[in-house]
Length: 287
Image (cartoon, rainbow, N blue to C red; front, side, top):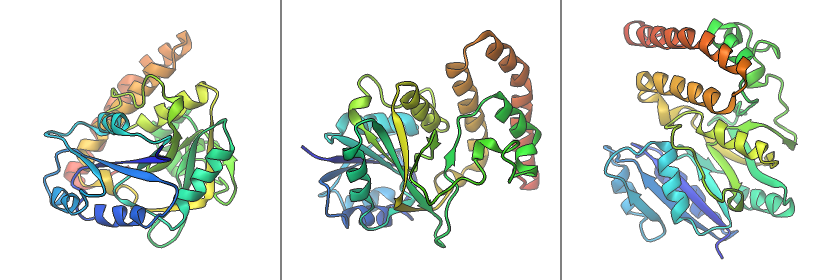
């Protein structure tokens, strides 16, 4: 049996995918397969992938399926005991795949292992968050989280002061690189109603709700060009982010209090989205 199925979803990733694939192919153990789902790229991504077709399983979509659906297709192709999601703008540091595999093999209650994410200059990337609630939403919409980025009260979602040098249980790591125990996902993998954003938050929430552990493991590391995958079409990403935020709260916050708060916040959230698009389009400003 294959130990790990590595799933990579590409969209106009021609600048990065070769480095990503080479970093994986340099790993000698554990056993793995690489599955790439290309979301109808219009750059040279397909040409790059064709050079690697002997060592990959590649699915070329005829249109952009969205991140979640593409991963679900990869999941259906996967034969591994574990699933490793990897962004095309990320590269594995040597030995990291084996380190993550070893730690999850030794801990049956661990469902996900998240490595340390590093910027290209070697600095640590802030990649661990808590699950968002309505207090988080309020601080995001008012901008207080950005005015006081070091505050554990106003910016608690982004966990300022988090120890990135310590193995620990966490709620929600970024899914730019994450190892998952396949057997946990018996019925579904990613919720396709989360087209682009908050699919990883939903995934982690389901793991924690199901009694599983999510382990941050800094002894394995990945270089990641943060925002490269979505930054090229920033204006389109803003409403998709809002859609993901709304979907997450509707799905996971179901008490009467939650529903009342949601109705109060919804107009504010939509207005905030429109304002961000206007500022970005006409003044090249984003927040």
